[in-house]
Image 1 (cartoon, helix red, strand yellow):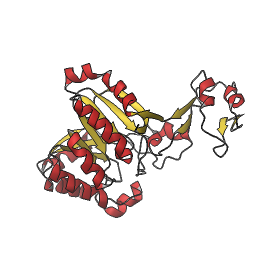
Image 2: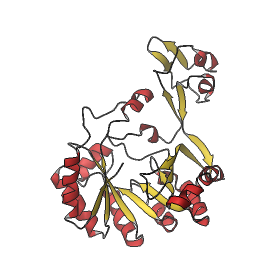
Image 3: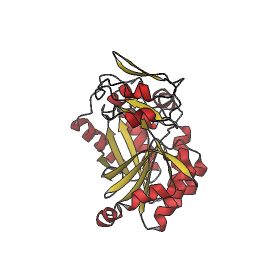
Length: 300
């Protein structure tokens, strides 16, 4: 049986495609965007998260750890990741939910059982399922099997991708996908390398190829102040998207709600003191994009 690693199944989602949707968040991403608000999505492994504000200092988790990887100090629970065997026994005894292991291995059948619970909502709202992440095509076989099962049951399918994947993975799944949500971060390759960790050449090349074989693509652009919200980048983005015959763009204004996740996971957040773009800035970007004949909306 094909298995995959899922870190969240979000029901009643309204921002990941048309209608009411069930969004499956796949664990693992090839990018390391400075503004990423889902740091738990990045690694292709189950990860430890500690909620210090929930912890009551009972030390039950330390007593239940078979390899003594946890210790209680004044600052809270400390985990030795070199000793930890990721057995999850600490989470089992934490009755205040201060410890969480992020990621769950699931079969296609298990995922489909979760999806089927929401079919009534899809029928009423013309919704469906969305594969997101992370990057779902890092687990391409798992994603493909889910998409096939959904199409066999006439469930509308959306794939949200960063595009930094093997073209063959996109080509194999595209006939089972009703709509692609395709991210464009930056048009300048050097800036893209700096802020995401990878070149944009594969991404833009894949988008060109995909636009030739698939009719339904919406471009998603995160709007990050001081990084990609300048006139030159947005002009080049609009020009490129329009040249491919793609008509729709969603703007995703920066927000910092993910900072607390970085703290709980012991990770460093690379952006400081950024504010969410105001409505006027978004309206100016919409007007710029509209000059290329694009339909531009503010996303969630």
